[in-house]
Amino acid sequence: MRPYPTPTAAITIRYIFRRTWRGRAIVSAVRGYGAGCSDHLHRREFHTVAIIGNSDLDIFRLSLGGNPFGWTADEKTSFEILDSFAEAGANFIDTSDSYTASAPGNSGGESETIIGKWITDRGLQNDIVVATKVGSHPDFKGLKADNIAAAAEASLQRLQTDCIDLYYAHFDDPQTPLEETLEAFNALVVAGKVRYLGISNYSPDRVREWLRITEENGYAAPIALQPHYNLVHRKSYEPELAQIATDNNISVFPYFALASGFLTGKYKTRADIEGSSRERLTAGYFSDAGLDVVAELATIAQAHDSEISTVALAWLLTRPGITAPIASVSRPEQLPALLDAPNLVLSSNELDTLERVSAAVGA
Image 1 (cartoon, helix red, strand yellow):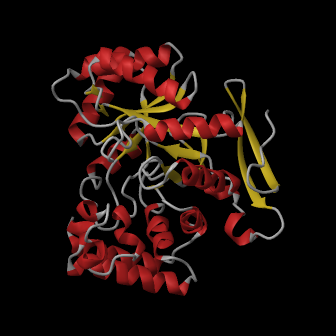
Image 2: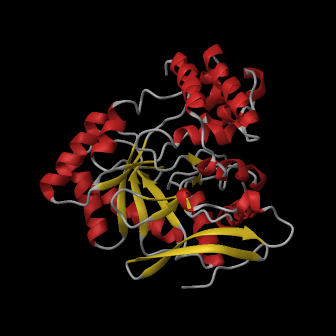
């Protein structure tokens, strides 16, 4: 296996556990910086590693969202974030071919391009697991067979790889027969261009239909599900999708895990987000019940000498089917709070309190 690079600091490898994955060495490491950096921030324990579904993909139980790359984080800052993430022993990055087409001057694929360039530059092709998505890029809208094939080729080029680790259908495409979509996805797996498949933003009924078609045709089964799910937004996952995932050994990776920053405690009132890039995404959370959730998170965080965001992510890791929440940062110094979540153990009383205030939100 290629030696682990040291792009920003001398790295002491505390412990490495390896698995063989299709002839490649996969490393999930407990790594710490060299002199001058705190082990508290960077040492990782064994129980923070999980396997996705019935695959052989070992991942750290926090997925780094790639949506800021090329948007709120330029290439240099994105590289710094990614360096810090890898140096902490984490290895799972989530992106999409559409990130970040909505940003001024962008056309889509900027996040994949930055991630692919970083992985190649650092020589981490054997260490990093990347999930990306299809169906939302401005040039490749929808999930028709030819569109999936063309979009996959474009993603492979941007990521500078010959195989995508985990490939999601980003959104359901009701105008395209699901049979056509799944045949196209399966063809990518058979061709060796995609290892595993995932489903994002599908209703319970459509996930069931996906599973039925997969079984009837002997197609590659999905191993991952990506719903919108957090302490102030629960009904789109609970209870139906949670049960489907559990029954079918599908790993769940909730996006908006921190409610677009609302569950960090950064925003106290609506006025705090006016003019922010997050305004549209967070405005709906500013109810009395939503703010009560943040207040309880702050109380629990103080008791653990932790951060509000750490507690919010730790709660997600206690929920049925959740393998790793997806969370993003726009600056490297925001990472430690996220990376500490898999090691934070919440008491039954704390979980009961969060259940009570979360239920009051009703979303």
